Image (tube, rainbow, N blue to C red; front, side, top):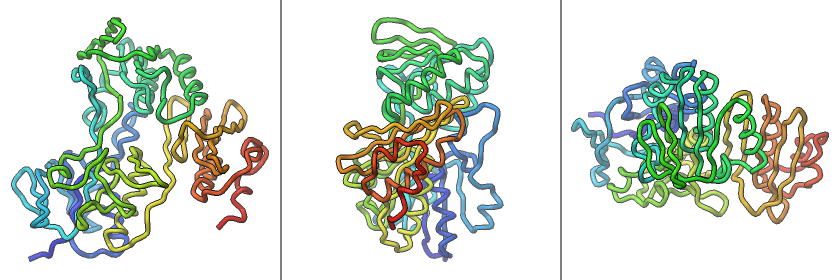
Length: 398
């Protein structure tokens, strides 16, 4: 009889990457990856960025086979039996584990009254939406964050009419500074997108939105892009600690030492606060870290968050976690490209957000990410001076 190995629940970027990371670190016992979707694991970011490309799979069947990873698709896990250390599937199977990783991800957020909107999270969601993005069709997007604006851009490129409704008084309010959001919004307006800002939604049907001011917006279909919530039902029913995600420590261990959680579903400590991140990079980085932790590594996770969004020719990148109380320093790179650096009270770099019509900001954002990781004070004048190579600010620090 095969001894219990490592079971991973959730076959998204985090769960799949963790399975391969275990093998790369020399783990030779059984690795079982369980995904509720019928497909091979795929990357979610490309779904909202283009209608012309098919899914980008994380790995194909031969790669799983070569790595000796047992991939079970198209079935959900019904419960976690911690007493017997087993994952019980909806089809009745029970898979024993020595260690368990919950990488259950997140699901679309719906506010009351929005149940009639189309969601945009899975491959099937994306295919259903993209198939309708043709010239003359009117798409209404509820939500002006990264996903909503990426979808708006893809729709306009396809020739569809687009209206974006956002409850906040500006787009991307949770993720980028106002100056950068204004540039992105202006580009969308230039491309023909209409915006309704600072107005909530009362009710949504398949093709109509009733706004909080009484206005009624009609279109051909409505897509909700107002964020996601962590998938924590399995953890809750298993009696694990949950608070805005599955609560984990710096090694991604839950309140049960044999159960770990990582990716969109977990809430972890980061530099004096508890956070939950929803990004491809975080899922990838956490997968590598939790794989090492499962195998006994006790290093604490301290990777600087990084996000990006592509909208038309615009590239937006963010390193760190933007706040509201820091000092902002602007660096103009040229051709409309700029980076806004945020410094804390002691002068240390807290975050950096940039926007450009190409990838002109990538190098400086990467260097800023490294400076944030160092946690050292940085001269504001040097940050603002586009002629100063940021790399020089890293010299002298280990």
